[in-house]
Amino acid sequence: MRIRFKPWARKELEESSFYIDNPEEYKGKWRELFNENPIHVELGCGKGGFISVISSKNANINYIAIDLVDAMLGLAKRKIEEEYKKDNKPINNIYITRYDIERIDNILSKEDKIERIYINFCNPWPRGKHRKKRLTHTRQLEKYKTFLTKGAQIFFKTDDDGLFNDSIKYLRESGFNIEKITYDLENESKFWDNIETEHEKMFKEQGIKIKALIASI
Image (tube, rainbow, N blue to C red; front, top):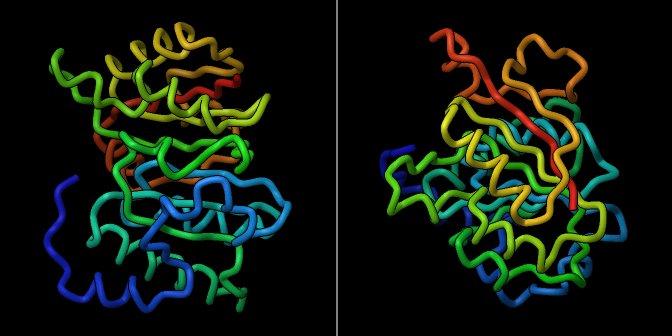
């Protein structure tokens, strides 16, 4: 998603108590920032519509949200503050950070014991030579395996049929087990406790069905 430059974003992030500007220094040490509760990660958090809601609803789970764009993270930071303020909750179970997800194995390790990854409406990179950039590509999945704990899960949803079908193949090639799958999330009320993202609402209004899966390693 393209987004306009936000001149205020960098300053607000640097002043935020839950923004990490140097995530490589925390590889293997994220639990020192958190506690012994499970750690879940969202890859490509965008404007924070998903991570702000799920983290504020689940105080017993720790969250790391990653994106590469300051403007996105600035909006996510504000959205998180807004959600926690609704119930007067302290923001103590989430950190957001700016990093290139293609190099994610530089900031997370087995010692961090990551139990779940969320990937919501990532760039489908439809052109053949760009497909290795997909967040669900085999190349990326092998990196995730370096820090996922045994039994960890990937929660993935997309509007893109090609990306979804290829992702199923990638996951199986990398040794992941597909636990649940749907080609019409809106009509699968018991699939998971769904949090509708901005993209999801837009695609549904266009009549595009949302595909989703849960995979484990």
